[in-house]
Length: 133
Figure 1 (spheres, rainbow, N blue to C red):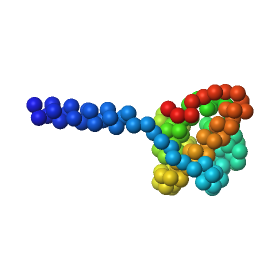
Figure 2 (cartoon, rainbow, N blue to C red; figure 1 turned 180 degrees about the horizontal axis):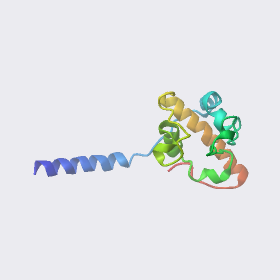
Figure 3 (cartoon, helix red, strand yellow; figure 1 turned 45 degrees about the horizontal axis):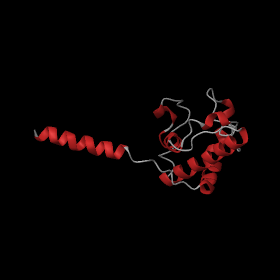
Figure 4 (tube, helix red, strand yellow; figure 1 turned 90 degrees about the vertical axis):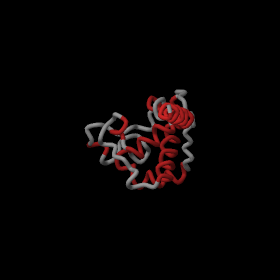
């Protein structure tokens, strides 16, 4: 009986924790600097996926300026891709996890910067997509 009660409590706790909305809390301006230091070589100076290294990769880096990419690049997903690497989310191994290199706030900031590029493309391309999950 004690075990059943404990399972119920743990299950309820997990359900409550799962309802919490993700908040990026990133600073796009600071993220621009992180991007220029670490990301531009693959994703390009303008975020269009044409960086020096990115051009030679078998799987091309995400083009943040393509409005078609805005639907799946939510705040939480973008943060997790940068933090965990794309392979952790069923995507290419070429996007490495940055958690060992960047501090959590830097990851949040660079995610905010890339989402700013996505938002600008969404407006320019006339595509309406969700900003959050």
